[in-house]
Length: 537
Image 1 (tube, helix red, strand yellow):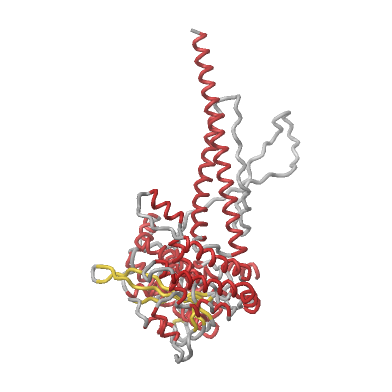
Image 2: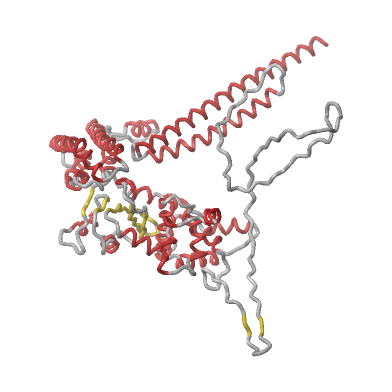
C-alpha cells in the first residue's frame, strides 16, 4: 500500500513538473511574441516619423499593430501568472520570470500620496532597540479616483444701507448657458465626449445616472446647443484663419441625417490649412461645413471669397472654382496622387485578391500593368519623403531634378498602355483619370508648396466615419451644422497638439469676459494650459 501511495505521489509530482515546464514555455513564447510586436510597432512609428506615410493604409496598419500588441501583452501577462502558479506546485522547476518592457516614470504633475509603512521598533534578529534609518525604498502605484461630482454654491449676500436704505448685492456670476446650471468643465466634457469620443447623449446620460446624477437627454441636448452658440466666435476666427491660406486641402464625406422617418445622405465638407510640409509658419487648422447634398453650389459658397491652390479629388463640383475669369480670383487645381494610386492599387492588390479567394468570394483579376503603375507612383512618393518639411524653393529644386524625369516617363508609359486597352476597361479608366487631368498632376513641378496627396484632408475627415459607427445619423440639419462647428474646434485643437477637452473648458470659462478684440488669444495655437500658467506664476 505504501509503495502504491509513493508511486502515485511521484506521478503527481511528475505531472506537476510537466505542467510547470509547459507553462514556462508558454509564458516564454508569449513574452517573446509581445516583445517582437512591440519592436515592430516602434520601427513602424519611427519610419513614419522620419519618412512620412509610406502608403495610404499606413495609419490603419499602425492601429492594427497596436491592437495586436495589446492582446499579446495581455497574453504574456496572463501566461506569466499561470507559470508562477504552476511552479509553486513543485520545488524542482523555477518559474519563468518575464522582463516587462521599461515603463516611463509617472508624470511629475500627478499628486503623490505618501503612505509610510510602520517600521519595526526593535531589531527582529537580536531584539535591540537602537535602530538608525539608512534610507528608504519607494514603490509608486498608479491609482485613479472615480469621477466625482460636486455642486458649487455661489452665495451673493444682500446688504441694506442704514442711512439711505439702498440694497446692494454683487452681480450674478456668468454662465455659459443663460440661466445655466452647468459649469464649463462639465460642458466641455459633454461636448468632447459627444463629438470627440463619439459617445451619443443617451449613453452619456446612462453613465451619469449610474454615477448618481440623473440628467435627461433633453436637458443635456439643451446644454449642447447653448454651448455651441457660445463657441461660434471661435469657430468664425478659425474659418477666417483658414480662408487666409494660400493653399487648402478639400474633401467631403457622407453623413446620414434623419428626415421624415427615414435617413437621407447629407455631406460634411472639410477644408484643411496645413503649411507644415513646406515649412510654413502658419498653424494648421480644419474647417467643417454641413450640407444636405453634394451639389456644386456648396463648395462655391464655402470658398466664395477665397482664391489659391486647392488640393482635392476630381469632383466636378469644383470646376466652377477653376474657371479663369472667376472673382475674386481663380482657384488653381492640384491633383491628388493618392486618389490616382488608389485606382491602380485596387487592380493590383494581390493580398486582397488572395483573401477574397480564401473566403470563397469573387476575386478580381490582378493586372501586372496596375502593379507597375503603383511602383512608378511609389517612386514619386519616395522622393517626397526626403523633402517633407523643407522650404518651397528646396522642394522645387529636388522635384525638377528627380521627379520631373519620372513624370515624363510616367506620361509616356500611361499613353502607351492606354492605346492597348479597350475604352471601358478598368485600367483604361484609371489611366484616363490621370491623363485627362495631367496639368493638375504636374502642378507640384512648378510650385513647391503643392503636396503630392490630399491626405491632410482625409486624415482630418477620419473622425466622421468613426463617429458614424457610434451615433449612426444626425438628428436634423441643425444637428449636422452643430456637428460641423464642434468637429472644427476639436480637430483644430488636435492638429495643434492641444487637449481638446481642457481647451474647450478654459475657453467656455473665459470667453464671456474676454475682450472681443483679443479673442484670437483663445485659439488653440495661442492657448496656454492653466497648469502651465500656474507653474509660470
